[in-house]
Each structure stands twice: as structure tokens, then as C-alpha cells.
Image 1 (cartoon, rainbow, N blue to C red):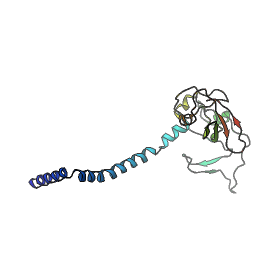
Image 2 (cartoon, rainbow, N blue to C red):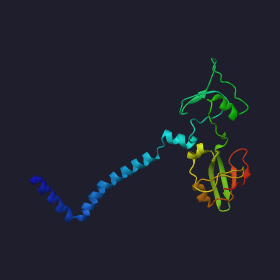
Image 3 (cartoon, helix red, strand yellow):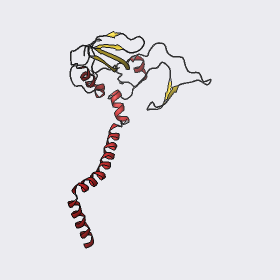
Image 4 (cartoon, rainbow, N blue to C red):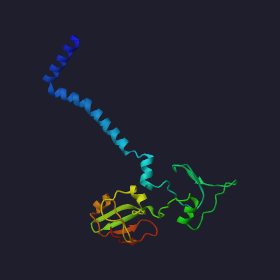
Amino acid sequence: MSNWSLALRVARREAWRNKKRSALVVAMLALPVAGASAADTLWRSSQITAEQKATWQMGRYDALIDDIGTPMYQVPDDSNAGPVRDAAGNSRPLRQAPATVADLAALLPPGSHVATPQSTDGTEVQVTESDGRAWGQVLETDLTDPMLSPTVDHIAGSAPATADEIALSSSMAGELHKGVGDTITVRVIGPGGRDAAPGC
């Protein structure tokens, strides 16, 4: 124990005499550890769990169903899917008319609740203003449906009630310097795009 005491006293004396060198040694040891800890924290916080993704996409509902007009085989998390084929390898023809809420409800257990169908999920749009342009995506959803409330964080204003009203994310509203009641011009990017001037 006396040897350890002597070594510690000598080390403390040397560190006190050479403060700058001691600080440099501490920094050289601490910085890599701090950097690795920060990188690990950032990576872990950026990972979205399956439960978080499901809540973000469908709120409190039990399932999210896409109608593509033909029967499909798929794994539960939709990571792999393919059309149902007969013995000859042919898939069934696509249904021409889209399924309705009544069609889907008839296939579900009694008491099941079906939300309003979404027809524009992730459509790219361009917002044009006098001082520049911004790009974003359109997500069609019923913000008045309490089952879908976990999919968004309501900050200000009321849910859109007419075809010429939209809700903006806080980041896009800040980028455009727009608030509740303002007007923006939106153009759908791609074939068939048309200009519109919805209110926020």
C-alpha cells in the first residue's frame, strides 16, 4: 500500500507541475470516449422501432391495408410481397374499380372501424412563393379522427375541413414563413399536375 501511496503522490506532483501537459493527456483520453458515446447515442436515437413506425403510419388502428386491385401474398411487416398466382404461374387480373369502405368492412369482424381511404400518400408537390420555392409530400388523412391522432402533433389551427385547406408541418410552415389562415400555391410534381391555392 505504501508503494501505491508513493506512486500517487509522485503522479499528483508531476501533474500539478505540468498542468498544460496533464490537460492535454486528459483531453486525448476523453475526446475519443465522448465522441464514441455521442455517435452511439445519435445512432440509437435515430432508429425507429416497428411499434413507433406503426403508430406513425396508422395511429391506434390495428392494420393498414393497401388496395392494389389484385390478391397478394405478403409477410406481416410488408418487407416482401407478391401477387397470388395459379398453377400456371399467372396472376389474377387487376380489378378496375377501387374497393370501397363497405367492401373492406364486409371482410372484417363485426364492429370493425374503417378510416377514410387515403388516395394521395407521399405525392410530391412544389410550393411556389414570391421569395422562392419549397418541396414536400402530401399525406391525405382525416385529422378529425381520434384513432389517427397519434400520427400527427397538432400545434396550431384546426383540421382542414374543405378541399382548398391543408395542414402544414411546422418545418415547412417555418421555411415558408406561413401561419394559420395564410395562402400558398401548390403544384403536383409529375404528369397530370395542376396548380392550386389552398389555405393553411
